[in-house]
Image (tube, rainbow, N blue to C red; front, side, top):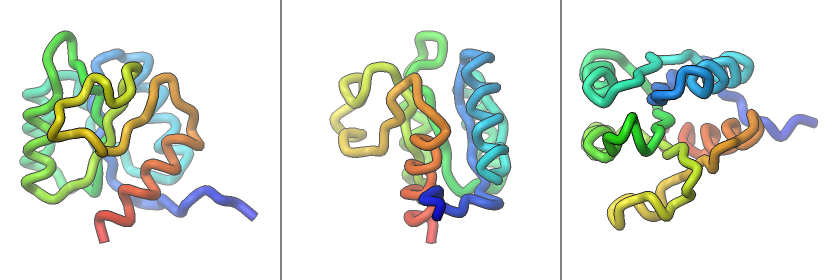
Length: 125
């Protein structure tokens, strides 16, 4: 019996500035049956996607080339779209307002991503 949640059709925005990491996340999402939105490697690009494309949730790199992702987190929160941070620093790199948000500790495996997305999917219903 599989413990992987059914993520088929889940539209996931990927915001990641490292191309190889982004490609790895995209592959994992596709393997899990998700639809990849983006990916976006810059904050402005990600904000444009959030404002123009339908999505269910997002996976956000905390730091995009030295630029914090927090304005996008605030926008997603306003729109009611759940998200998880992806970072090598755990929640130590988050603002107080973001403490308690789901965090994918880099490097992560497909099972970790599936678990977090399963949690986020519950928040979209």
